[in-house]
Image 1 (cartoon, rainbow, N blue to C red):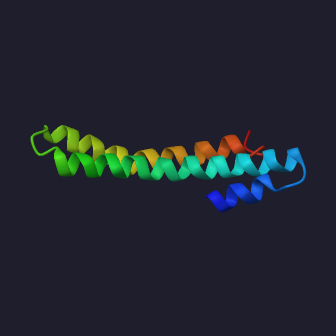
Image 2: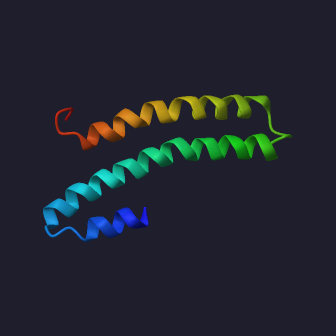
Length: 83
């Protein structure tokens, strides 16, 4: 990501930088939408032995549903044709 940021900042035009940077931000948000629920589920599985079963079930559902729901929303906000 640092190399991508360096390349983006090396573009000559501010309009080009803004357009490319918004694409990078959308991609980073999608990656976070996939990894944050995974990390949360892993932490609950590892350290939540005394938690109620409903917590494990809820975290499993969050892990399955959140990335699938957020991915089209994030890229839909970015894409002008969908707006």
